[in-house]
Structures are given as C-alpha cells and as structure tokens.
Image (tube, rainbow, N blue to C red; front, side):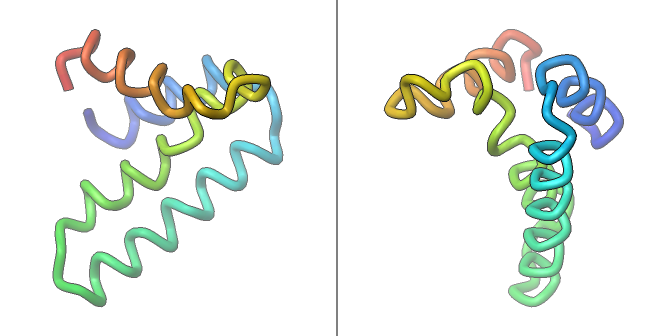
Length: 78
C-alpha cells in the first residue's frame, strides 16, 4: 500500500479531524525515527499513519484494536 491509498483509507474510515491529525503526526514521528535508525522510512511511516485506523470503530472494545486494521490490510493483500 502506498501513502495515497493509506490516506484514502483513513478518510473513509475516520470521522474525527483530530484523530486524522494524530495519525499524520505519528506518521511524521515514525518517519523521523526510521531515518534515525536507518530503517525503512516508508514502512515505518505507513505503520504510524495506519496505527489507529480502527480506533473509532473499536473504541468500546480496545482489546480488539488493531484487529480491523489487520483484516483490512489482508483484504487488500498488503
């Protein structure tokens, strides 16, 4: 999955503008950490970007978080 597809997924799953801002901020932090540790910046960035994708859907059952993210990524063969 590329960043454009991830952003499309986020905007279709997430209602809260603040949650979207949070996911974008975590993406930026993860990219910086990847650079610092000489790791895959794209993978780390996408991980940060998508980490709370299912938060709104599972906010009453946090123990299931991030199961819906995994299921969606498997469905898309990512």
